[in-house]
View 1 (spheres, rainbow, N blue to C red):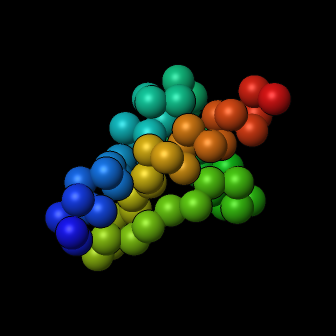
View 2: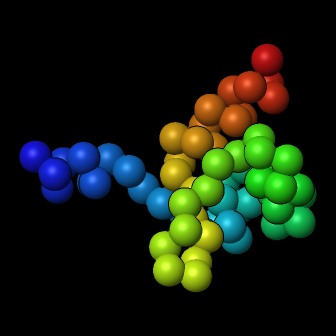
Length: 62
């Protein structure tokens, strides 16, 4: 059951997340800084769930 939960949570790097949204990396860091996008830390790496990006995109499109 745990493996199913993790397989549905895809994490992207900040570079990949910026590309996914079609925005610059610096713009994405600003959104993270102001709390508009939540991140996960994996060691020293910053990762963002695709579902978080999708929710953010839906919010700014509305």
